[in-house]
Amino acid sequence: MSFSVPEIEDAEVIFNMGYNGPVSHPLVARRIVRAKKKGCQIICVDPRKTETARIATIYLPIKGGTNMLFLNAMAHVMITEDLIDHDFISRHTTGFAAYAKEITQAQYRPEAIAEQTQLNPEDIRKAARLFASSKHTITLWGMGITQFSQGVECVIACSNLSLMTGNFGHYATGVGPVRGQNNVQGTCDMGVLPNVYPGYQAVTDPEIRAKFERAWGVSLPAVPGLPLTQVPDRVLREPDPKKQIHAYYIVGEDPAQSDPDLEEIRETLSRVFVIVQDIFRNKTCEYADVIFPATAWGEHEGVYSACDRRFQRVRKLIEPQAGCKTDWEIQCLVATAMGYPMQYDNTRQIWDEMRSLAPKFAGASYEKLDSHHGVQWPCWSEDPEDTGTQYLHAGGQFATKDGRGNFLFFPYTPVQEAEDAEYPLSFSTVREVGHYSVRTMTGNCRLLRSLADEPGYIYMNPADCKPLGLTKDELVRVVSRRGHTITRCLPTERVAKGATYMTYQWWVGACNELTNSVFDPKSHTPEFKYCACRVEKIADQTKAEQYVKDQYAAIRRQMGITGGTSV
Ligand SMILES: Nc1nc2c(c(=O)[nH]1)N[C@H]1C(S)=C(S)[C@@H](COP(=O)(O)OP(=O)(O)OC[C@H]3O[C@@H](n4cnc5c(=O)[nH]c(N)nc54)[C@H](O)[C@@H]3O)O[C@H]1N2
Ligand SMILES: Nc1nc2c(c(=O)[nH]1)N[C@H]1C(S)=C(S)[C@@H](COP(=O)(O)OP(=O)(O)OC[C@H]3O[C@@H](n4cnc5c(=O)[nH]c(N)nc54)[C@H](O)[C@@H]3O)O[C@H]1N2
Ligand SMILES: [Mo]
Image 1 (cartoon, rainbow, N blue to C red):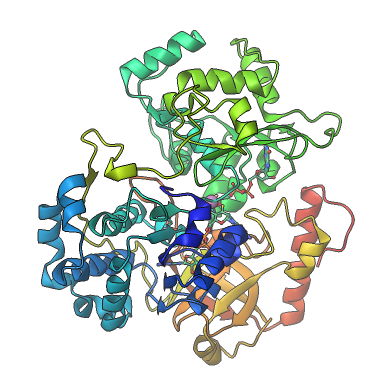
Image 2: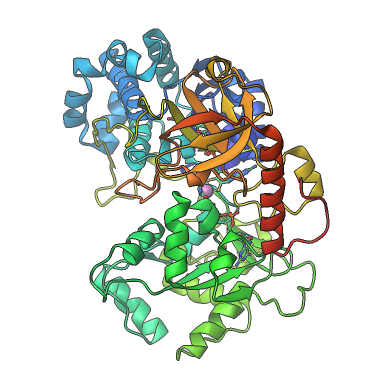
């Protein structure tokens, strides 16, 4: 994120693209509401009528999977109507001429893409004019653009809009990927990615590799590791025995619930040696050969990074149960048992070692974290005056070799599986406010279960329910090319005709039985937001209700959940 979350309140225009703050990040959503109260105008682009859409100046109900067509049309209007910042472009960017040549072609006129995106061309023109009308335009995006096979390119297309309007490098402007879990930013910062060490230092760079080899007294591989979504391929379809995967060490992740195409995941997990390190028994534990019980937040201390690059210390409040250890202690014990003695006395030692190896984070000492309510990276020096970076690219200086922002053009790549006669509806998966991801952390809480419980809902337009004779709360079967699941029908005008949505929190109503495991070639993020499905009526509702009850009870038993009622 180039700006800081509090700056959202001072935005004059918010371009909210495929992001559902009110459900996913209530604290960010509150900033959006405050901005609106101060006069900010909101452009909301989402195929579903979200709460942000409701308060937007311009709401664009885009057809799912057509983001790039729309983003290219936005750029087309900005350039052809001369709404761009020529001074910023010439002083701080490269590649504009080549980019503009592509984007000004007639095929990117709003009128030319209206049918495919299902948008009104005049609304697109108004949105482009509004975006370009301010130097305090903030872009917020979420999974509605990234969970597609063209995710990364759409992120770049969003950045292009900020670049050409001079919306970078000063207060209350820029681009904001609003990240997922509390510490997903932190795991990336700390190098829990296949291609970088802590501080985004490439494993393929020989100098950087040598630095880490010296610090750790080991030799390190010169090639990046494997992205998560390539694991099934390497287990099930890799002919070279040297490249096959035989063991899978899973820390704080529940692939048997959260990865796409669960049938394939179950096959994968049952073929390899599985170690699960978690705070609860999750679905993946069924396949585990070894389980390491870890401590949860409140039972350990450490540092989290927020989506706006802020490191914050978290404290231990209570003693963990007997037998549980912190994640770092477990990892040290495993490393030591494997022949690499790894020993730390506390998290500060780990943090200080990390700072000594990652220049961007070098100045973010525990002392500064304590005295400044956290520190935002980059924070280069120990100097007490260096308290980090509130917004990036100050004065139009970018973190590229030539210090300039690069324009890159991409044509539209359609989704990998479209609707057809057999599977006539589109199927997308999103979040809901009362439950969290794989639901280990919220499914055990009676209060939250009373808000919403198994087997969840499929959101459908009433016009699609009618021919199937479906009514609210009725159990239905949802089927895709990869599998099927059971859930309740929720007719709602918030979704367009032909489109359906499920949330991915449900164990019985597991939408990932249906999702497609194709992924973006750059990020390896699966296309969770689009595949084709059909919805089937279930004749015997009594039997279906009993099936849901039995399944739920069986899953809870397997997860070791006792007490409370199941449905
Ligand atoms: N309550 C709750 N909060 C959570 C989570 C949770 O499980 N529960 N999970 C956390 C995690 S891990 C993450 S990553 C974040 C994610 O937070 P968000 O990105 O807000 O999450 P989603 O609901 O997956 O998707 C956002 C929006 O994208 C829209 N969308 C779908 N298809 C398209 C499309 O083709 N174009 C456009 N423009 N939009 C589209 C959806 O309708 C949805 O409103 O939330 C975090 N917060
Ligand atoms: N269909 C569909 N699928 C999706 C998505 C979607 O939009 N649609 N979104 C995707 C996204 S963005 C994400 S981020 C993933 C999320 O999916 P996951 O990462 O699998 O789910 P989480 O619920 O975030 O938590 C994973 C595990 O971490 C454990 N845990 C919590 N705290 C700790 C801890 O301190 N230590 C340890 N060791 N374990 C801990 C929890 O008990 C849980 O079992 O799902 C992805 N899957
Ligand atoms: Mo996420």
